[in-house]
Amino acid sequence: MGRHEYYNDDGTTDKQMCPRCGDTFLGDHSDRLHCGRCSYTEWK
Image (cartoon, one colour):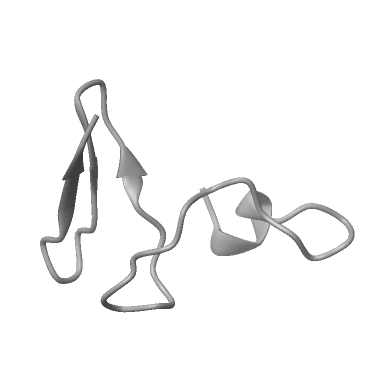
């Protein structure tokens, strides 16, 4: 998916952003949210 496909028409997004990077989406896995850029992980 392209980055533009994550945004709604009004410019908002439902995906969580990485608190460390600030400009990267967190990957939504079954047991965690993970940033592929800095390896930040939030366990569900």
